[in-house]
Image (cartoon, rainbow, N blue to C red; front, side, top):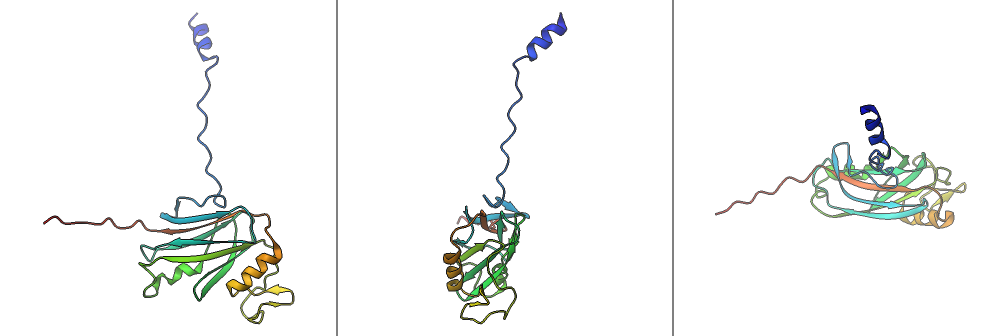
Length: 180
């Protein structure tokens, strides 16, 4: 009788639903990356697109990470006269523009970095000095300027391949005020 009551009490009892799975990083950059907190983030649902990211770094630990749905996607980033590029995938890739945190005056001010991500098969020249500064050579684009990246994006049109970018930094030190 006790067994029958226990079994009857189990009927119709459902387990609580599992917690929702975290979105892949290329859909939404994680809140924390290697112990650093996200300062700012942006996402795009397609490649051959660009987005600008604004942030104010709080330390020299600043890291800018690009997450791409398609492994081998090509990214290019620029701020002012500086640029950086590389390839990315779902695990992320670092933008070398964050290395500028060691230059005087880079910390403590707002930055706006523009990013483009292109599909892995985009006609991009690889390596320095592979194309003249004016743009394309051998039907490939030398990603060395925002103008060239915009031209390539316009030529390709939006393509498959979601991506996100985020700036991460150490938490800001708490401010201490003194009462007189």
